[in-house]
Image (cartoon, rainbow, N blue to C red):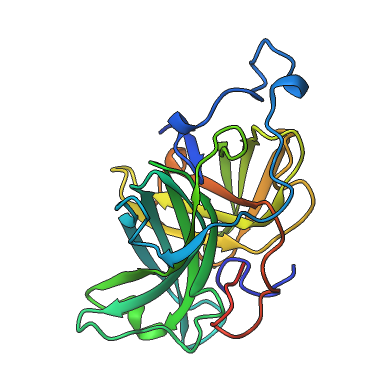
Length: 288
């Protein structure tokens, strides 16, 4: 099944930007900082951010969110006849001067005729929520959905990404910053089913841990083109802690056959509060 789709509760080695671009992040809690991290880290807000709800394309200052890169690879059916997996990755950019908070992102996979090839709700991962996207920042959004097995033989498939509602929040850099990750390696555990484990390290500018909303992965080929992605719903302890320990993400049935591991990116989705509601089987609720 697609990466961590069920169960629900359950550029070489580049510095990938998670939820924000690197230029928007201070080195306050970097392990290389000469200052005392405990004295210079950021105190996180004590709850979810509040602001103005509205379309993601229309920030109060005239900017907005847009998709700047995308890619998809269909992984053929393995041990599940009739159902393939579309490995999807997109990059979303915030062109505004506001923080985009809890942005809904939905996906569809289309054949050459423009018809959807997604089966049912795609395994529950066609709708995700990106907790935080700072002004000028880019964030990767990865997922994997069930598609018709015939799509693997199609001449052309493409991903259709829709950016839904968000909450626009005035940016206060002393309270809201982003985290960064460094990709370590990807280990393929089952080549036939395109499954593996992605290892990475995260650096957080916050003094304490945040709520985790899952981890997205983006895969690229040797040219830098996005060829797929995944979403893990694993909300285990430590995902968004500032301890910088190596972490792992299980990628199930959605590692593209052709990818350059030195360009793999991990995006822990960290939030200032728990998800508004627990993920359910309805596509009206985001997977994460």
